[in-house]
Each structure stands twice: as C-alpha cells, then as structure tokens.
Amino acid sequence: MSDLTKLTIAGARDALRKGDTTATELTQACLDAIEGAGALNAFVHKTPEIALERAKAADARIKAGDAPAMCGIPVGIKDLFCTRGVDSQAASRILQGFKPEYESTVSQKLVDAGSIMLGKLNMDEFAMGSSNETSVYGNAVNPWKSGDTDLTPGGSSGGSAAAVAADLCLAATGTDTGGSIRQPAAFTGIVGLKPTYGRCSRWGIVAFASSLDQAGPMTKTVRDAAIMMQAMAGHDPKDSTSADLAVPDFEAMLTGDIRGKTIGIPREYRMDGMPAEIESLWAEGRKMLEDAGAKIVDISLPHTKYALPAYYVIAPAEASSNLARYDGVRYGHRAKLAQGDGITDMYEKTRAEGFGPEVQRRVMVGTYVLSAGFYDAYYNRARKVRALIKKDFDDAFASGVDAILTPATPSAAFPLGQTHDDPVQMYLNDVFTVTVNLAGLPGISVPTGLDSQGLPLGLQLIGRPWEEGDLLNTAHVLESAAGFVAKPGKWW
Image 1: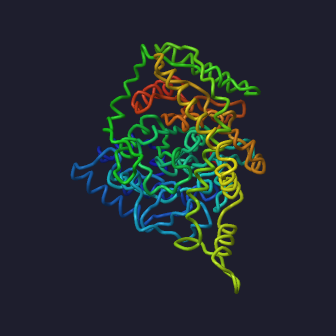
Image 2: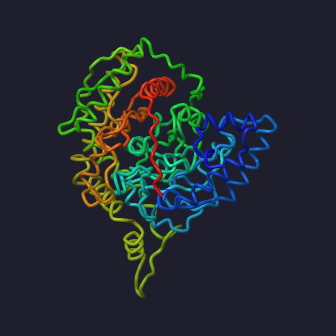
Image 3: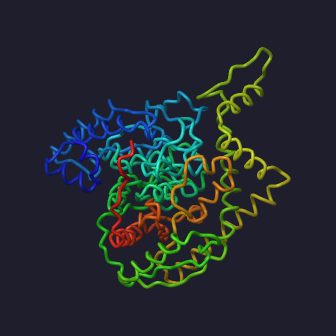
C-alpha cells in the first residue's frame, strides 16, 4: 500500500483505468501516510471521511467509463482555499473556526474532475512569508534534512510542497503572489507552476494581494502539472479578473521537442554574492536546453533590480485593503471586550490578537504607503516601476524569445529559524520570482540538481502570457535532461 503514495498523477491514472488499484485503496494509502507524518506538520485539517466518500464516487465513475484524468487522484488543498464545511483559516488565528458555506472555484473544479481532497495544508499566515514560519499552526517541515537540522519547506505554500515531496498526496494546490509556489517547489525537489494571471479563478481564495495572487498546481512531475492544470484552469464569471479563454490540452502539448525555440538568459539575474552552485546549475540548465535544440541568447531585463522594492510596496498596500474586512464583526475571532469598550476597541483588540507579527507588519507598511502624504512617493512610483518591468518582458518576447531561464531561488532550503527574525533577509528569497507576478506571466520551477549538502535546487522558466502549454513542454525537456530522481530519505 505504501508504494501507492509514490505514484505520479499520470501513473495513478493509468493504474486506476487498468484496475491495478482503486481510488479507495489509493486514498487510504495516503491517509495512512499522513497519519505517520505528523512531524512534518503539513496537513492541518484532515478530512478522511470526505476523502473516502469521494474515493468511492470516483471508483464508480471510473467503472462507468466517465472519468477525467484527475478522477480518483488524492490531493491536498492549501488552507487559503475556501472549502465548504471545512475549516479554512488561511493559517491565521483571526479566522479560527471559519467554515465557509461555499467552495472556491479552483477546488470545486477539482471536485468536479473527481479528485479527492485529503485535507487542508499548512501555509504562512495569509500567504505572507517565505518559510512557513508565520503559520498559526506552527511551521511545516521540509522532508529533506541537512544532517540533523530541520529545514524550511519554503513559503507560503510550504505545507503543499512538504506533502507532495513526502508522498503524502499525489499533488496539491498552491497560490503564488511573489513566488509562493515556485520557491517551496525548488526547496523540496518538486514541480511548481504559477500560471498567467487570470488563467485560474481567484474566487473563494482568501485574498492577500489581488493583482498578484494566482493559484497553481504543485506536483511530482511536469506531466502531472499539465494534467492538474487542465482541471484547475478556466473562465469564471464570478471573478472579474478571470480570462475568458479556452483551456488547451496541456498534456498533449508535451511533445518533448523544443528545436528552434529561443531561450533568453537575463544578465540581471546574476546577483552579487550568488552561490557558485546556483550559477553552475544555471549554466548546466542552459546547456541542457541548447543540447535539446534550443537557441540560447543573452537578454536584458533592466528594471529587475527594482522589482523587489516595488513588490514590497504593492503587495502590502493591497493586503492592507484586503485584510480590513477582518474586524471581529462578521466571522472568525472576536476579542473579549472590557466594560466600556467601544467598536474601535473591538477592532484594535481583535486584530492585535488575530493577526501575527508578519501580517501586522505588512498591513502597517501598506497603510503607510497608501496614506495621503506618501501615496505618490511610494505606491504610485511602485506601480510605474511595475509597468516598466512588464515592458522589459514584453520587449524580450517581441524580440523572438520563447522562454526565459533563471534560477528559482538564491539558495537551497535553509534551517528553520535562521531568518525568521530578519524580515529583509527573508524577503530576499523572492528575488528571482517576484518579477513574474508583477508582469502577470506564467513561471515554473523544475527540480534540476542537488547542492553540496545533497539538497534540491530548482531552475525557473518564464513563459509568454497564456502560453502555459509551450512553457510546460520546455520544462518537460529540462526535467528529462536533468533526470532529477533523488528523493528525501526516511525522515520520521
């Protein structure tokens, strides 16, 4: 039974159709694995009853020959997605006890496709963090280790990354605001796809920064990402930012042929102090794609150096607006009030008790940059920089570049607690990923090698808007050439 959890989505799909196993057996194997992996703290709300009920329904669909690719596949759902009747806290105390009466569009699409929710996954509070250490549930743990040292699985989708890497589920949903799918994927040796902004509906996903947030799949392979993306994507009239575009057959586009494609290498991503191992891996990735028939060209994205400060103005500004709804009035946590306290006291006490330090920090920064005296100096200037960053990418693609290859992260996974008290150092983890969100582009992290400590490293591919299929095919070629097969050892 334990071997079942090691299956990929594609492998499980084939096994289910052949009758080699059943969705019920596969689901039970994952539930057993989750019970034995409490040390990872990846699953924070388990839903075994729902899972087994859906597995039974999936078996019936498969038997009847009415089974989409994701039918019978056990997955984990990030706690940021609202799931009907199941705790949906965004890893925050302020939403403690919140069980929505509705389902997010993305998770509903997965339900409709026959996938099986095993439970809700750990994350940074309101998706604010790069190490999963701001969660009200406590941090998730990377299944990879450095000696006896526990490592971060990355953030904010750290629980999703840890669960997939440890074979607790076959795949998981994540969200990416500034790299929160791609960075944890790189830290745990899995694949993480951030689609074009608008490809997946944001409806029913607890908002952090509305112009940046985007849902995406976190999987064991690029093929699995293509299969899961097919189920997650699509127009949603409930989301005004959802693109009314047809969803192509992403898996069918994995031809493995990139001959004639042009891959850009941006010179601005060579950062001072970047570890030699990252530089070496980047050079290896470049050669892999070149050997596969792609043309490699050097390009310039001149405004890259302004991306991180622009992001950390825009994202907190949007967060301060989105999180204003949490006031103790309608749902979630409400502070106990003393005699004589008024509504302002209730707001202040509820937010002080409900929000963690990082969320409070970002809300305060966001409120500051939106204030009358600083709006033009900070927020408007950051928006202008964002437009310039997008233009850099537009110019590169207009010149004939089909995809851009960069490192995914500036390092391998670091020890838990190492940068928790240094927010600026923590923010630097997003240095290679935030540009993609600011420009609204698709990006994917592919596990490509190991560092000197035996920890996974990933490379990032950035694609043209709405061309996830082409991006996935290039990633598929990189994955095949890298031959990344190393997995974490027995960690519990």
